Amino acid sequence: MISTALQDLFGGKAAEAVLLSLFHHGEAYGRAVARDFGVSLDGVQKQLERFERSGAIVCKRQGRTLVYSWNPKSRVASRLRDLTGVIYDGLSLEAKQFLFTERRQPRAKDKPVIR
Image 1 (cartoon, rainbow, N blue to C red):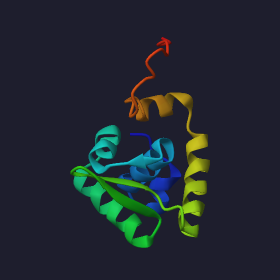
Image 2 (image 1 turned 30 degrees about the vertical axis):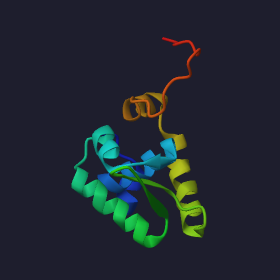
Image 3 (image 1 turned 90 degrees about the horizontal axis):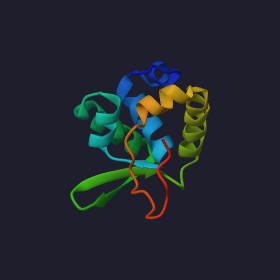
């Protein structure tokens, strides 16, 4: 796990994982964040609930899965996204590849695979 200032600011790996995952993917769900960052699912779910209570993120249900995204109506969310963006931009390419190896969207039908 790569440690950033987000972990120090928000007091844990789960908060850092949630924010970076939301910034990178635009939306996230608890199990994927926990798997990608190697943190406990319980910690991630509690952090998602905290951010939702604060109004920074919103939740929608897709089947049985709760999917979280930035709250477009919240001024706090836009500032938090900006802060997360500063930290995200400071990560090396290797760190980003390590943290975000799994694709969330299917590849386009005719798009070539570059290796």
